[in-house]
Amino acid sequence: MRFFEEVLDIGNKLINWYRENKRELPWRNTTDPYKIWLSEIILQQTRVQQGLPYYEKFTNQFPTINDLADASEQDVLLLWQGLGYYSRARNMHYTAKMIVDKYNGNFPENHNEILALKGVGEYTAAAIASFAFDKAYPVLDGNVFRFISRLFGIEKPIDTSTGKKEITNALDLIFNTQKPALFNQAIMEFGATHCTPKKPKCDTCIFNMQCEALGSKKVMSIPVKKGKTKILQVNHTYMCFIHDNKTYIEKRTAGIWKNLYQFPLIEEDIKPDGITKIINRYLKTPLKFEISEVFDSTHILSHRKIQASFYTIHLDTSPIFLKNNIFEIPLADLTTRYPVSILTQNYLKRLNL
Image (cartoon, rainbow, N blue to C red):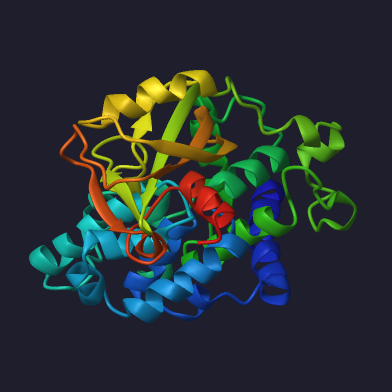
């Protein structure tokens, strides 16, 4: 009996703590499933501080799911620009159109139907079901994994099926089925602001007498992960051709930056003394040109490290390219009409665009 009283007490403590300490965030003041879904997609792989301005931009420009569905993918990607993981935006736009077509613009309430939406995983489906419809589905994001594994002293790797199952079972013990939305918000908030990865506030923690990891002095070694993602290094050489305040770009058709725009790209590390051959490889006829600047940049993603070089190349004549997918635009339009990667954004800042 005492064990079950302690378990029940954990859930009540979390909710009471949350009521006193929660951050005021706009998606917590609504039960609109569209806005909750939007916030959850934005906050995947993104901190709240970074994601909040994007949530506000999207809800202002696309206040309803019909508005988002009616938008062009290019406008959606342009608004998403700088947030990264662009497949989230493409999936979100696809799903908005599907909900309008299949559900007449009404977000599905059934958990399995939510889970079947493109770009929606187990965590996101549980969050939408509980926050929008107050259904009893516990959420299990990184913050919850960390808090539960520390509280119960779970040392099985969280990125294995056995580790996840043990954490899920422990979470089920304390989950408040009568107040699912409130409980889910509370446990996520506690992990995000109190039981943090690097500097957890153990001294003032309301669970410091119950936490198994604290009692065994293993807080910083829990949660455990079986393996880390191997990071592959790749090289990108971009050529920014400029003539008469115009530049030349192409649209990516695959990869993490699919449907974003970029300067002509060679996915190789090209040395300055070899760039002339590369430039002439793109042009139908050789032209006189001058390289005014080379901008080097490094961009680290979850699974790869990109070493990029941007060559600013001034042409004396309008070029004709061998590749027919490269087209001309006013240089100033690149920052207002065409979504680009963060790498290209950093380069454009260098050009004061």
